[in-house]
Image (cartoon, rainbow, N blue to C red):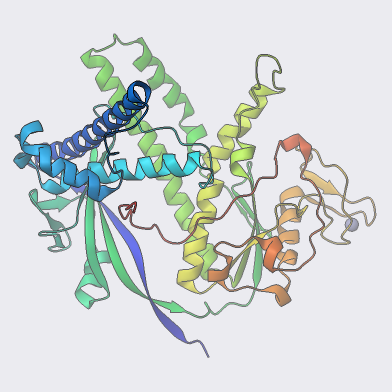
Length: 466
Ligand SMILES: [Zn+2]
């Protein structure tokens, strides 16, 4: 009854590296070369655009052909000029420069799409020059890329390198022939080196995870998640816990003399603290989402407009916002809880483990509806932690009430399979109890169309503009 499907998908495996001093220099050189490639390409594109503009003004016509913005055109230009422009280019793998140009091509494409209104999300600016230390990863696609054993791997030009953590997960798959390494990207974060292997993985995806229940998950600020089963998952609140230290480190950094060694050291300490907080948060979210995807048949979450919720309420000089301080505290909590990340993880994990993710309509009043009699209240302030129903007298925790409503939203008749929910606009394809009512004004949530980006972390395949 429970038949398994084998699917091929792209998945990234990341490991922290433990390079020697010489290898660290080689890695830094490659990442610097990628940055050089990015900046060089941007300079060419800007010069070409400026020249064409000048010609149009002076002669009324454009004589210089536009430098292509796709990776191939940029790489052709680089190959023609590299001996002259950077005679030392052989010190690094040619893929380092190519990585920088690929990042530039993608940035230009994103800017162009955003300007034409073809790209969702906030507006993208024109690419800017990358300063020293700005992360541009270096991606290897050819050459000796392999995992030697549980502790060592080999990268082109860098050589055999030790890892900080065991590579068993990927090694086992490669040995069994269910994973093929396509690329390796090295990057540096807060002084630590990482490699990310882009792999084509053959996964056995079960049709079902053996459970039949539906669970509603209300993501919140006080508790990270409240389940309709009554369980409350307390979030790591990692940022808040580390806030005191963060303030101290930031203060120390800002009081150091600019350009001094101490300032650089303070910046490194601050970056390490930020990275630690981010790692704690990510670990917690992975544990939560894995457990949910493995132990429930259907998971229903709200379609939260995180960008709208965490928008600052500062307002403008003419029209100053209200409750700015209180809202910024809420924003911090929201960012801390990483709602968007929870959903992104749930989307691909549900597909892996044979469960279904359903996203309730943004206008479904999960908090304001009574989970016993269905009465919808007109108003429910953010401060009201206990939901009280005037019709049936139910008194219940606000988040639990919302979670139960979400579980009820997933009517069995409208169950959709996981792949279909990927880009689902629930209002389009499904039916169910969802009175279209505006969301609570107090939260400042504005309705805004948003697609769900989903699936396992995709490889950043260089974009090619044709
Ligand atoms: Zn009621």
